[in-house]
Image 1 (cartoon, rainbow over the protein chains, first blue to last red):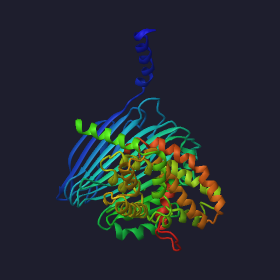
Image 2 (cartoon, chains in turn yellow, brown; image 1 turned 90 degrees about the horizontal axis):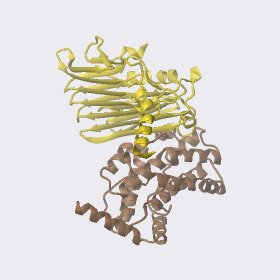
Image 3 (tube, rainbow over the protein chains, first blue to last red; image 1 turned 45 degrees about the horizontal axis):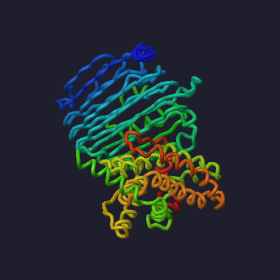
Image 4 (cartoon, rainbow over the protein chains, first blue to last red; image 1 turned 180 degrees about the horizontal axis):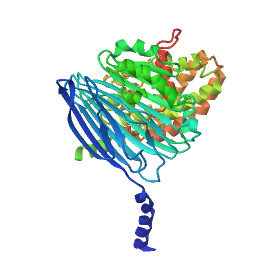
Length: 282
Length: 227
């Protein structure tokens, strides 16, 4: 066949992957302290990522929208948000994000960088990410906190919609969250789930049959005081702990999306400085 | 470039000079329940899993420990140990940040500190505190111990300690405990091979139910174990 034959063959193998629709989106947002609490300092939107800013008082709320309607293989989404000194920024999504079945090839990538300055607070409150069968999603969330920054995070993941009878027999999910305070790594969460998600989630020490999971992180001086109050809100399938006097973490398992949301609402309402974004309440 | 190359050659030489017999004897000393790290005091959340009904017999214990080995602290400690053995920077900070709750952090910090304290006195190693797998990895590299054997014996000691805890908590017969350990030992070998590159970008933990049990242990009213 010779070298030319080999090249032609590999080009043929690559072709179907290139036909895969690939969404690109970049969103950069920053806030600064203003006369009414917080104001948008910078905003750049490109491709399929957009932000809406509902009128709220005392802080800036951004509702992120992925206009491509979901994430599939080869997509590249990049979010970067900075809460400047003394400002307050809450980020959420308009709807649940969906990771759809991907063709063989590179996974969809969602990369988020959050920076919180001294005296600022940032709440990262996306709605659920729903994983569909044969989805391939690679997520990276990096958070840089100044010594006097406040931060609240929730990341709810739904492993298939059980009520719809969906099976998750082959997924490729690679998720990593890194939080640094003054440059030092203080929180690292990494989950790589490759293969039959339901078989994994039925394992006793993994999900014990759950199909929904969330991690919550609260970095603020009053974290320690909040711990007993947070614990009182949690059922047996969830737990909370302190990794430092100013760092509270919680992990929640639930049978489905709705049950998880019922557990999260009182918890986030307690930890968030203001009312939750309206997209969480509907 | 000359300096790193020389380091690699020296490291390889050190590793080949230690016979497997000597390595196994030294590791069995370090990882024996008699070594003063106080491993018997830590249940890694198992005490809560038993109290809440998740583990009631030897089969359920084996399933739980299989999860920890393949998708929990077994696999992640193995990678941290390997990274430390290879001298990777920031391994200990990564290990601390990866701890999923206060008791998990305490478990790895206190056993690491006790291990370092003894090894610094008896083998004249440095006494820099480190988390447990990181401390073992560094000490093993210093003694020229083979990485694969170090990891597999570390993992076997980890599950063996949890089996002893379960024998008391469930309770189970001593023979049942040994049946579980025999069943899990091949997994220790397999995970050791998978983890040897020590790539911390491949760290992963899926054992959320076990992490939640460890968190709930903090407020459990009747406790025999520190974690």
